[in-house]
Image (tube, rainbow, N blue to C red):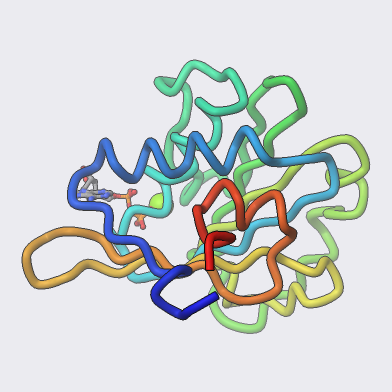
Length: 155
Ligand SMILES: Nc1ncnc2c1ncn2[C@@H]1O[C@H](COP(=O)(O)OP(=O)(O)O)[C@@H](O)[C@H]1O
Ligand SMILES: [Mg+2]
C-alpha cells in the first residue's frame, strides 16, 4: 500500500459524506475513530456520513462541541464526542469509553487532545486544500475492513 492509497481527496461535502458512509458500513462494536483536523475541516460532516452509513437520519447529526456527546440509535449505537472545549491532555475517564465500546462505536472529534492509545483508535485526519477540497488521511494500523471501505487495500 502506498501513502497515496491512504490519502483521499474529497472535492465536495458530498464526497466526504460518501466516504463516511463507506466507513460507517464497516464499523463494529468496539471501534473508536479519532478524527483530527482544524475547525471547519469536515470532521462533523464525516461523522454525518458515518451515521448515515449505519442507518441514521443524517439531520440528527450535529456538532457536539457544546454538549460533548451525542448518541445516534443506529444498527449499533454510534457515539459522537467532541473534545475541543476540554483542551489539551484531557483525561477521558469520565466518558466511560469502555462502556460505550461494549456494544457501540465511538467517533471522537479532536481525538488528538486525549491519549486514546489504549482504545487502539482508527486515526483519520482531514485538512482543507487550497481549492477547498478536503484531504482525508487514514493513518496506518486500521483494521482491514476499514482499509477496504477506505479503498486503501488495493495496493
Ligand atoms: N469537501 C468537503 N468536505 C467536507 N466539508 C466541506 C467540504 N467542502 C466544504 N465543506 C464545508 O466545511 C464545513 C465543515 O464543517 P464541520 O464538519 O463542522 O467541520 P469540523 O467538525 O471539522 O469543525 C461545512 O460547512 C461543510 O459544508
Ligand atoms: Mg465538528
